[in-house]
Length: 277
Image 1 (spheres, one colour):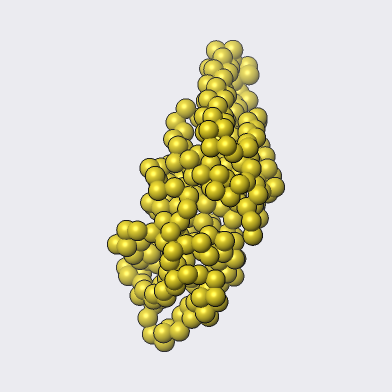
Image 2 (cartoon, one colour; image 1 turned 120 degrees about the vertical axis):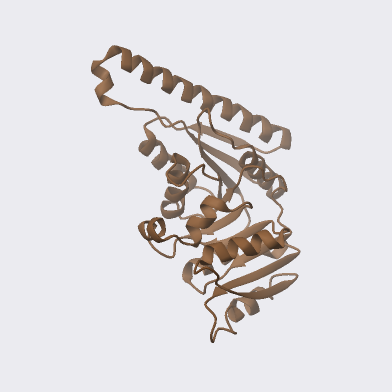
């Protein structure tokens, strides 16, 4: 699949730190010769009770004016970066309360080949809500980029988290153009031990026909936590440029209460992660 439209979606406020995601999206669009389509959500503050209290309403109006100004500043930064890279770009500021703006962002992201998002600042943050809405409702693969990522958007070493499920298969298919161009691809299967010496062999044979160099690694789960096991492996390898994985093998409530690989990666990954749902 050739990338023709890349969507950059984010919450826009004064606390937004998204330089890495902006640079990643612009760089990816430049390399692919793709158009960059941006969706910025300032997420208006709405307090119905404030409408009968002029002083409170004035504070609400001030907050919303600051959020809109932050969105316009972010728009200018993105458009400047795209122009300097020779990338065509459109950038929409999505008016409305948080849920309305988020739904507009999801709808806009559907008309793209790939979505780029900045990593959230916390599990209950508005950014996490946007990421999850994109993953669940967009129907497109998404790359979440952590703050401080400076290695660019041309992954040389890619890790595929493989559990044999349909979402992991979708992620591999969505990431295939990146996997084919990478110098090396490692398929990692986190297992509980036992009779699993063939874990990942089918997908390894398939990807060996696409990838320059391919390795298959089986990791035994530690601390009864597959997410932590995978994070420890990524931290130890040190050279990985992209992780590819399916998203949310269990419900979001299950992930919140008991933890899970997707939740761990959304909160703690220090490298870009491509998710498919």
